[in-house]
Image 1: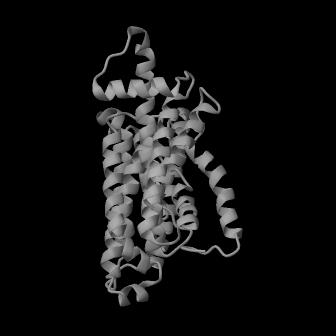
Image 2: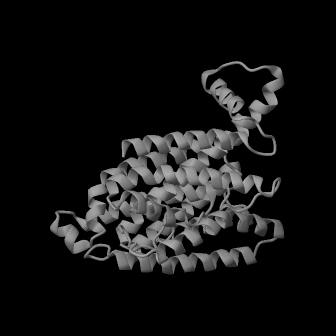
Image 3: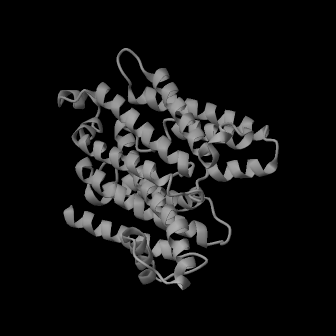
Length: 340
């Protein structure tokens, strides 16, 4: 496990350096690493290298690092949600958080709400929408007996459709077509607005959430077997499920606020990792975020280079990759949720 984790971490570092160097202006990995080190250590570069340095440090580095953070976060949240609701088709967006975030972002884009916040208006609007969706889902699904997986999923799906309907109405009422185009592109995912200001918050939320989820590893193992089994093993399923719901909602809201909704990462990555390392969450929660980060770095690279100078929506690429992989897993003889 240690060797696999270390190997994947090295692959992630190499992927980040390569992805930062590639684009309309190609910069070799050696120079890319040198510019990054100069930025981090306060080193000097020649005057002729200033333009390349600015491309590397100011434009590409925050975008690629944000892609890695979001990819890791979506993958690890997918692991937690699938165990929490005992549903192999669950992903970070099944609880309606992304739809609520989309409504918040669309409201800002179309009607200029929160315009005084400048470039952060859309992200803040999206996070507020995600928070509202989380509160509504929790309030609608909670009972005196606690939160059951079925009620949580059904409530999330129902409210997700409701938020999507609200978003459709907002788009229909948009005063101009350019706003509509921006909304549609945002709802399929993009890291085009990545900045050094937005990166630390998302990275901190993802790291904190991943560490906390790692502590719930044994509880997730038990809950994946069913609530009755979990209770017999001493797990307070109501308390754990509530804590996981709050944590995964916070992480999902923070990620959607800066990247839009990117599908299939949180759905497929956990299954692929389980296929290799088994169903134990102690291992899965270590490997999955690294795999998700590497995957998203390369997806973002394809997004901005395949049809450059235009960008492909990230959700389109993840769907093209995720659908065949998921169908293969479904058809693979002997593969079951959480094991082989």
